[in-house]
Image 1 (cartoon, rainbow, N blue to C red):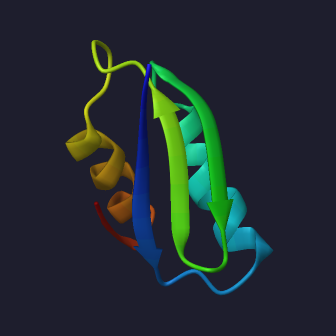
Image 2: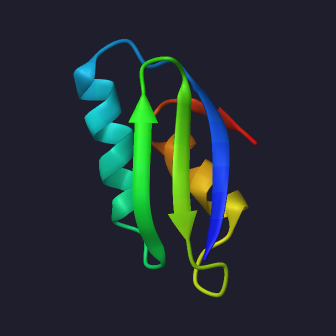
Length: 68
């Protein structure tokens, strides 16, 4: 398992946290997700199933900006 800390911008409320958490947890290989309004997402995932690039893509597809 690998851990990554992503900076996430554009979140303003609990609904935003729920949206980001939901899209990440739907990915095969994502084990744990901790998203906070302070602007980050800590994700534990299986590198053989999902990449950091894909994690960032799904956050951006949900309407937020994300960087490693």
